[in-house]
Image 1 (cartoon, rainbow, N blue to C red):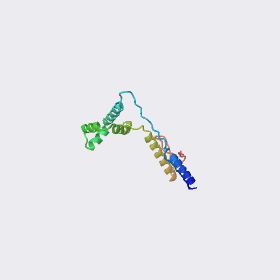
Image 2 (cartoon, rainbow, N blue to C red):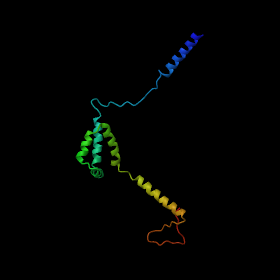
Image 3 (tube, rainbow, N blue to C red):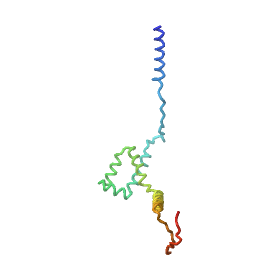
Image 4 (cartoon, one colour):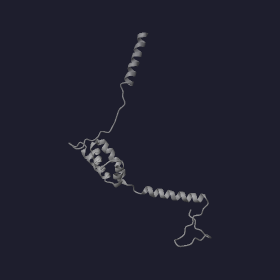
Length: 146
């Protein structure tokens, strides 16, 4: 009886070991492309450096760097000491400087402010009167917005 129980226990332990410890999860990841032979990614680094140089030519960036006490030569020295990953990170950050915005956010903000003013005036019981330029408002028949 004990030897039969031992075999079942041993079989259960071996089965648990095989199922639990020998099976590992599969790992997947993207493999970077090798590119052209002889290309070590220096083209991408050069492109990032050009983008950073363009951002450094911006007057606001130059003034800010001078406010921090950095000269143009010091900035160039720091740039030459950076690793490719740091250069890429700085290049991505300089995209915001170069973009300058498209003005859509400002238009939306102005429209929201106008709507809020109209709602507040309506809640206060004020009338909104629209007249043409040069005309005196006719208070007997006001043209109401909304």
